[in-house]
Length: 218
Image (cartoon, rainbow, N blue to C red; front, side, top):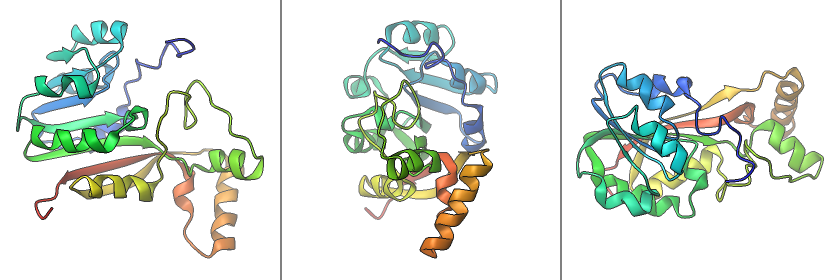
């Protein structure tokens, strides 16, 4: 794809390792890129699979992971074993899908009995993005970030939770990650909270981390 940064598929997303259960033995990473994230888990003795549609990235990941399926998730779904994975992880991938809800529903049968979905999702309410859109009136697509031109969907913390609940999951944890280091934007979030008399500090975070499991009551 044109204009994709050279490190787009190579990030190791080490901040997401903290959300992986210590008991996890089999993990599937959707949109694994070059396999840099899952490679860290393989070093811990975990069996890691990946799904990756990009040709070059899938080839590189194949040399690192237990198995890599070179396809889009919807085309690969029948190659994924049933009731197998302790964790299925999306590191900034759901927003690239036209129908994330359909895919989340399809993956329920691929989780083990106590399996979890773990995801990182760009936060549309990130204060820098809000400032650009609401104050400056700008909506400029970029090569990466929240307004990445390859994004089909946009999420907030509230809508992320709703997405999973509507797909039959119970959200166990949701929190902001990768906070802004800008004093200016920290101050703006504080002022925003004062003006609205509500907690607006979710705007400080670039991404949302979410952990969910299948809701047996649905």
